[in-house]
Image 1 (cartoon, rainbow, N blue to C red):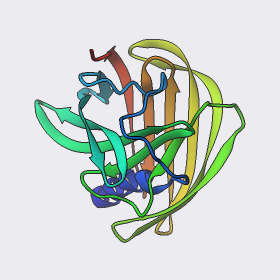
Image 2: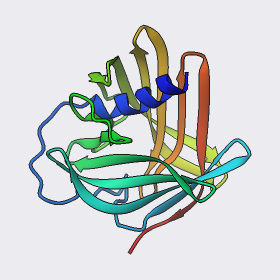
Image 3: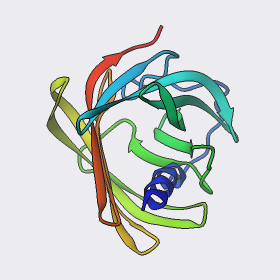
Length: 194
């Protein structure tokens, strides 16, 4: 099951459509990419930190490298590409999908949706994201946000990927459910890098 969850995260990287031609990391108020930007989340009773540690090219895309840190140890890395039309996951733990996966459309518009179809490490992912506006309560407070709600099929199993994203902070909540397992992370603290 852990493997499916890991591949599902990678899969989110693969679900994009569109070409990229930038020569630097993109910027968006919906996903701060300055080096040093840090999000502290709660996941149950534990905490995890995500931090922009550097800007680097991953394949053909300039990305912010995000490290996930638990108890002082880096447990995962992902590469996020910010394009004019959306936020894309390009790689997760070094695994790249057959194409980047758009998980949030820019600029966000309520009711807008897009389809995703990708392959990541022999996993097939197919589904759809839809944008809505929603107030979400997290440890950092009650926050107006856009919900990018994803309903997917991952190798024949139903999966959900829900991102609550707010201007100025990025992801304030994430819920994932795949193969009977689920988890949620909720923002406790945000610090923008310099």
